[in-house]
Length: 245
Image 1 (spheres, one colour):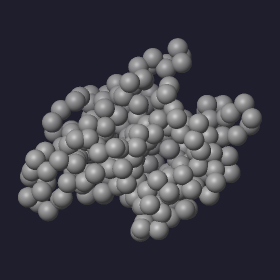
Image 2 (cartoon, one colour):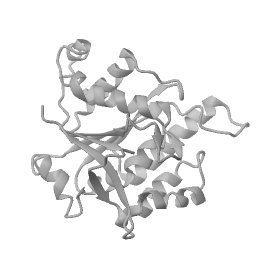
Image 3 (cartoon, helix red, strand yellow):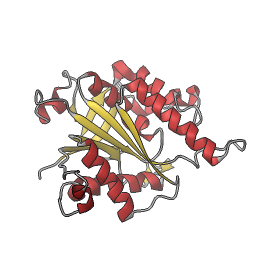
Image 4 (cartoon, helix red, strand yellow):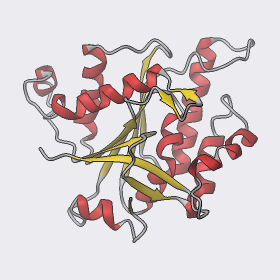
C-alpha cells in the first residue's frame, strides 16, 4: 500500500510540487464526518503547504438523543463544533449546504451545489465517503447520507464539474469548469493508499473531541483501534483515484 511517510512526497509529487499551493476539498455528509475520515491527513498536508476546505452537506439536525435540545439548537451547536475542529487542523474554511440530516437524496440540485463548491474552491484533490460501502465489517450500516454524499461527490468530480455544458449557469456567473486531479475515498474496503498519522494522532483526537454533542473523549479513545495497524502505527486509509482524464 502506498504511503506518504517520506516527507509527504507521494501526494506532492503526483500534483507537481513547486507549482503553487495545492488545495483539497473534503466533502462530508455531516459535521464530524470529515474529521473521522481525514483529520490527520488534513493536518499533515496543511502543515506541508496544502490548503484544506470542508464542505458539510447536511445540517446534522438528527444527531442527538438529548431530549432537551431542539433541532435548530443542534444545528447551531454542530456548526460551531465543526468550525472549532477545523480550526484545530488548520482548515482554511468550512462551507455548509444545510440539507436536512437523514433526508439526503440524489438530485440535480444537490449535484449542482457540490459542483459549484468544486468550481469555487478549485481543488487538486477531493476527499469523500465511500459510496459503495453499505454493510461495513459486518458490524455497522453505513449511513445513507454518507453513501449519497460520496456518490454525488464522485459524480461532481467527473464529469459534472469538468464539463462546460454541465450547469452552464455557473459558467455564466464566472465559475469556470474545473478538473480534479485525485479523489481520496475513506471507509473503502479497497484502500490502496495510507497516510501515517502516528505523530499527529493526538491532533486528530483533539479535532474529534470538539464534537462534544456527539460523543465524549472516552468514546473517541475507543476509536483508536480503527486507525491502529498491527505494528502500532496509526493510519488513515483511502482508495485513491488518480484521474486519467
